[in-house]
Structure formats: C-alpha cells, structure tokens
Image (cartoon, rainbow, N blue to C red):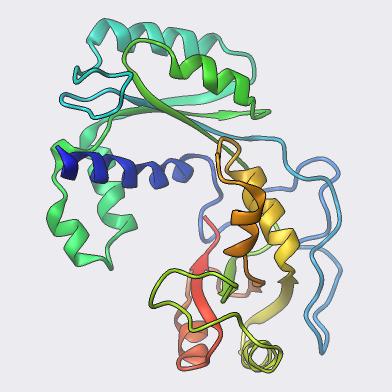
Length: 277
C-alpha cells in the first residue's frame, strides 16, 4: 500500500509533459511576450537579464483517476468506473477554454514514467505498470484554481493539478540551475558563490553554438515556480529557500546537452542541467 502511494505521487511530475514545448522547438510567444529566442537582443560579456513582458496565463490541466487500493481519501480504495470516466470526459470537453483533451492510460503513463526517471534505476525497478494512475490531460487558456478544486470533488477523481506555462517556454531551450540556500541532500554543499557563478558563465559563453545566456535572479525564479505550480500549498518562504539563480540558454542545437554537460563537469555551484520541456 505504501509503495503504491509513493509511486502514484511521483507520477504527478509527468503531468507537465502534455502542454509544454518540446525540447527541440520553441513555441510562438503569447501576445505581449518579451523578446526571446528569435529576438534582436544579442549576447554580451555579461548574462542578459530576464526579458520583460507579460507572464503567461495559459497552462495545462491534469485530472488523475482513482485506482484500486488508492490511499487517497476521495477514492476510498475504489477505482474509477467506466461510467465515471465517461461523465468526466464529457464535463471536461464542455469547460470553457479547454482544448486538446486526451486520455492517458496506464501503459502510456508507465512509458512516460520510465523516460522521466531513466537515470534513477532503483525507482524504475520498483515501479510497475499497475502503479501508474490513469488521467485526463488538457490545455487551458487561463489556469483557474477554483475550477481544479471543483473537479477534485467529483466521484472517481483522485487529484487534480494545474500548471501555468513556464515563463521561459518560447524564450530559451535549456537551463543550468545553480545551488540555492536549501538543496536536496547530495546535490550541493551550499549556495552558489559569485566566483562560482562567474566561472560557470565563462564556461557557457565560450561554448560553440551558444547564442544567448540569460541569468534569472532567485526572486524571479521563485515567482515563476509559484505561478507554474498554481495549486501548490507551499508557503512563499519555503519556495524562496530552494529557488536558486538559473542560467537560461538559447542554443544553435537545442536537443544536445552533451557539450554543456562536458563544459560544466566538476565546476562547483551547478545544481542541475536540463532542457526546457
């Protein structure tokens, strides 16, 4: 029972994959969006500040269905019935601003889970297809947390998550997260220092195919996190504690992180290197 609950909780991370830009492409900016990947701003001897403009209001909605023996209170250990799924699908299709609704079964959820955690072999070994939660996923024009609260109370629904579009989607291809005041055990020894940040920037700036480097301050990163995870219950002080500075990169070859990983290998102050998805 405990293992099923842990695995089901971890799969919620995969919900963001439905409405975020692919790694090798950049979405067109929303109306009023700042200069980004294709803009006229050029990289200089210092990192660029975050581009100015409107924060995205659009996002994604994921409704997880109850599974047999679910530990979540609303499920009472019973799986969602076929009729409950049909009613939920009809309701979601009628919601204003909802588009691209699709159903993800356990098979697809399991594939996404294995792809997401492909470097965590113990976790993959512990997971089974039967541990995955089925879900409905859709894009929304405007994220509405009241809407998610109402959906979460429906029969057969285990949980509902809403994510706003990340500020950096359409503006950069990859990111290098720096160490924050608080970090997961084993990732960092402390917050990235000024000399460490400068060394990381120089290593990035000298890479072939590096077109632009933005530096996102901690305050901006924390605001972005709070907006993206619209339904979070974490307090702002907690979010601020694990929000570090982030280099956001515009690349000539967006799909290949190998040169970046090699250039930053062994440099202190680097927390994570990842593609914007």
